[in-house]
Image 1 (tube, rainbow, N blue to C red):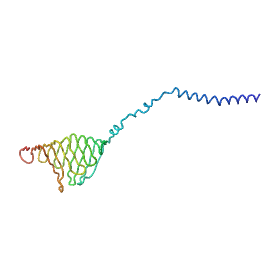
Image 2: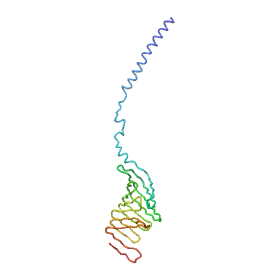
Image 3: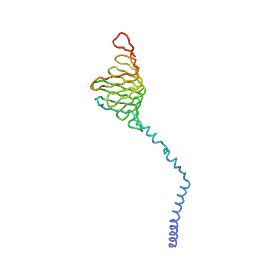
Image 4: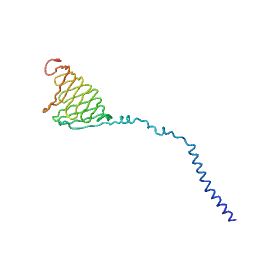
Length: 207
């Protein structure tokens, strides 16, 4: 009797070794059969992003640039934000505040709504450009171009403002420091209109 029970037990174990793996395989196949089909395009929702556009959106907050020019002036540039340009060396910036401080203590403060830096040589200011110098010039223009390696600022278009001599308007301006001189020289050209308000008792308009 005991031998018969052992044989029956052996048969059951042998069949279990065959049937259980087959049941497991069937269940696994059912999982794959009824699983939701994956859309390969939906699996990567950002595959169609324009990489160039993403690079264009890269911005820096509160960038700060400082250097010393060839004539010994200290130049600092601060902006609200800045972004690199993809087609050259440099970048664009918003709400720019720049200061050029010369060895003799004279300062030139520049502000604008926006601007563009070309490498480390040129800063182009645009939109409500204002220049205020410690020796009495207050100038306004739509665009001004400042060298970053020396004291040299140009307004290629119309400019208005005041100076030590009075109120003025001009078609363009060039502000620089002549070689072997210390003082700033401002040259105004193209339809210059000056209302002299110096020490004279009256006002005199020149054109």
